[in-house]
Picture: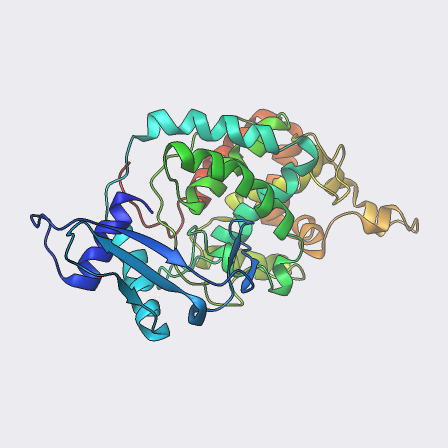
Length: 329
């Protein structure tokens, strides 16, 4: 357990102030047969809080061990630690940890895995709603993996967990930051623009509300309205849709980030009688070329890849800042 967490536990359990000379060590204990796999870290965690207890050992020779075994006390304690830890300053700074994050991400994210990692960004940040500033990029995707719209995201999160473990050994970073940087690196790995990401996002301790992601069956008008509620223009909607240029949607080379997405959209291959080409893209992709305003940007990006890269860069930065709560690094 870190010194910071121990200090918080000391305050929660004993009400001691920081000037106290009282010192102790804390150790979480649980039976060995009450474990399952955590979706957030890929590590094993205790199945039930009923199994937990904390052994606190004072440096006072005359003191005895203190146990917290009540499940209710454990919930209150862990919730308080989670909340207060968000208010604590980080060790180190962004300039030092950012290249470490990039390096560790590139060790585990290949071109073939890039699309899944980029999808993580959209599904974590895409819950943002401008009117009440709910949702957004906050790492809550780790709690939402069982939702139908997030099918297939367990693997990319597990991939990133391997990199995050290494980064956290040097300086702890939030899942929101890790996912944001990983998406940027995924684009770059596949030949897309290099997108700088500011660090300092805080994680949520609970899932975001359901039903906030844009359904794949939306029409162009539905997409524009949905993205408008999230603070994005039609241009930004079309630029961000270009992320489908990588992956298995059928838009060119699945491991190359380029403007093939827009060129193929203009061809409307899904209207073909061929079973192969009829599977290209999603209904929400097809809708972009059926709307005059969206079509204007589809044509622009099909003609000018540099313009697409520039606008995707700007829209991505906006996306990974949507709804973020910040802590200075």
